[in-house]
Length: 344
Image 1 (cartoon, rainbow, N blue to C red):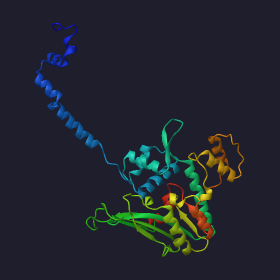
Image 2: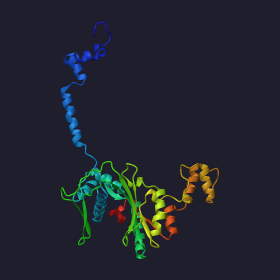
Image 3: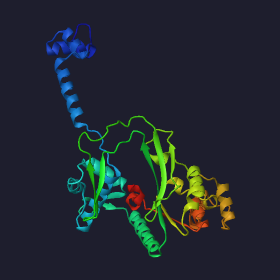
Image 4: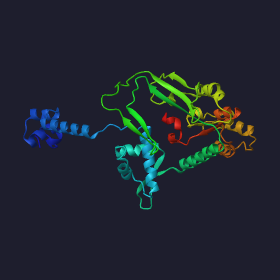
């Protein structure tokens, strides 16, 4: 103990304690404290290089690759094989080489989920509600084709002003397949997309007519969003649908479209109260719908009555089509390949 101190000097002066314990100079210790340690600098440099090598950029998967992933899962199911992520990645290697994390992300984007079997192994399977919607869609369009109905397909897309295709799709009639052939090196223009004008394109077509003349709508994007759906809204779409498309359709047409928000906005009379509604709004809807209720009921009880009595949703686009003798058919979620115009 130091003279005149009633407690160990090490607790009073930790710097002196460390200098005495290690047998080093105070100037050397200050260098360590200030980060002037050559060994530590080398260690940090090696660690930084290692982290930079192990961190990889997120791989992008386009719609065609997503189709490959979906078909591969279906093929494995047809062979009565349990589809795990490693097995799916291995099966995909002959077509697309992507990391297992990208495979997992794509599987979830396509509406598949991971479930556990009896042995607690996790395997890929499709959501039952998606399967049911696909079955209903296929049965309906099969019925329309048997009836000889004129079926048209509608979709939106985006196009950069600097867009340059990287290859061509070639048809092989002998195999009924199409193959993407990239251009030979140096035979196509290389223009960076960058920040340039982006066009939003809306059109409709059928197997009998191709793209229907006079229906195309092209306008310039005003935002930096990469999704064409962000630029369209229900007012623009409804106006185009009513004034441009409907007058040019053959009688009793079936219009196939995806379930984008502006394709499926509710008719005002079809809207029902929800959890954001107050009790007076819920009560007014119940009275308008001739539903008996007790005024002493809590909000949750009133909402349960709404859930039991609410009608089937009616969409404004469907009403416009029906009033002109046409019918709307929506593709199931995550199934853009069921809309042929996606390939144009």
